[in-house]
Length: 203
Image (tube, rainbow, N blue to C red):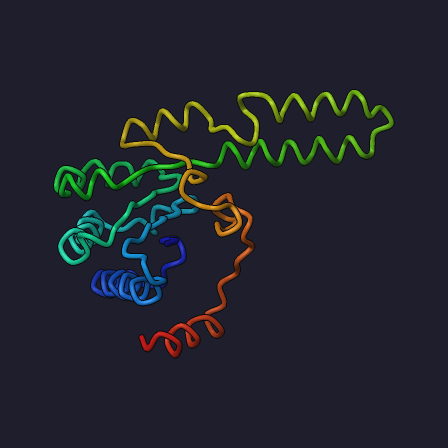
């Protein structure tokens, strides 16, 4: 889910959209699968995109009242300060069984380090002093701030509001969108994807 892409401020429609997405996810589950994970990407969330505490609470009410056995875990990525305020307001009203399934993650530090590594690799190819550049690339890849690590300050901030996790623990990188730190270069096209979804699963 990417709240920054929503096209309505109507609270009833926002909740209906959530129910539709849940029902759609249940219908397309493969045989033997009974739970789903919800990933909410808040990386580009602006103040105007933030759901009100009322809608946020209604979202969790829907999950715990109508889909109590469906939610495997909910992972909230890169929550901004304005969301953290909303979370502190509504979290005491969330059922403990549902609340403990909510995790937080941050991959901004990984992406930054990955870009640095790629930049160094380019410099290595264009540089006449390959040994020096190679040392720089290896140092970044092996350092605590390398592509496979998470910024300590970001991790601490997440731990202050709830359990911190790494998306790599739950998702194969080849099935995770590039925008979420994975390798799946997926681009949503409404005119192609939505009619196919509706016709194939009778939504």
